[in-house]
Length: 519
Image (cartoon, rainbow, N blue to C red):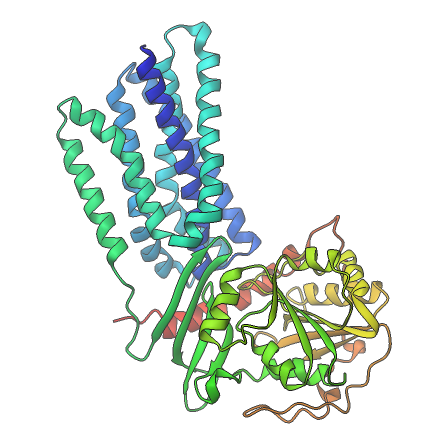
């Protein structure tokens, strides 16, 4: 084996390792708009990544024994892996729309088996084939195997940083996956072409043509839908879409939605200069906060489209916002008329409350990412950190799922029990509607607060001069099976998995009915 060939095979191993991580990241993020980002979804993505590689290792070992020192086998396997990557944007969309009515677990698993598993199998096959090509003597097998897996892993590490931090946030999912697939197939195809195998040229041209067409193609929505913004990032898919307010208003009037992983995070009317929310539940937050005087200092963890900021501005509050995804801030300013002068800190919410010296009258947790709640915030230690940010008489408010009963409600009951364990007097407000359509608002403070005389008014908002009728009686909350949540035992995602699945299912039904009917 010449030094040139050895380096070339190591280069292909590096490229294969990087492509594996590009495939895994893109596959997991492709699932998010259809199946969310819950623990089940990530478990399915990780398990099928390992399963695809395992199958590839096993198959590659068999083929390398059958086709000893046959470089063409390696080249065709890599071309097949590249082709499967190029096809991912096509197969993923088709299979996820077909499986969206299934449970989250089954839908995610079947979808990944169709669009992510095949390229991983082919990529897994390459390492044993390369090791076979590099090993002339049995005593060198261990060294060759170690080098191949080390170089492949190095490629995976570098591609993970590049894809996660720069490429996917800038270019989305489809284009990077297609480019990586073409790149993975390019060098092996050129090697085969030099060996007079012209079929490889035809395959390469076909992949480039198909990938270019997909990159240039634009998604089509119904005529009364207008997409202002579409971005893919490591934290999910973000869209800004004007569309009818189906099921939210009697007249289905047009509204503007901030959509993260196919769940509406913010929905405002196009009238009144995008200043007011179409959703009635959002008005309960400023109403509860209105027991504090003008000039109060508010810390809002989670920006969304800026609805709460505007509402607190109307109350005369001074609001600081912590948002982890800078795209959300940019979108809020550009498409939801958020005042650019709003003090928005790009940071993780828990990191900020642990490090800031500023004190606030109200700290608000509104940190849903699609259907997932960052569990590191809603722990006993997280609440202790938040308490340190409060002025005397201050209050913590937290948004959460509407489920309180049965297994689906165990997460909310555990959050309630954790607030109590932190020494805070805690009330639980439920917005109108059934458990699967309402929101819960935790109201926790060191002193007893009276919500019978609240003030908040905006067009379309319900009359909320007295919130006591919306408070859930503690006598109806059985917290005997609830768990005090701690940093050392991060189980909240497990507890709310059933609730998040029900919530995600309702959104999937909504989007299948109104968004997937494309022309």
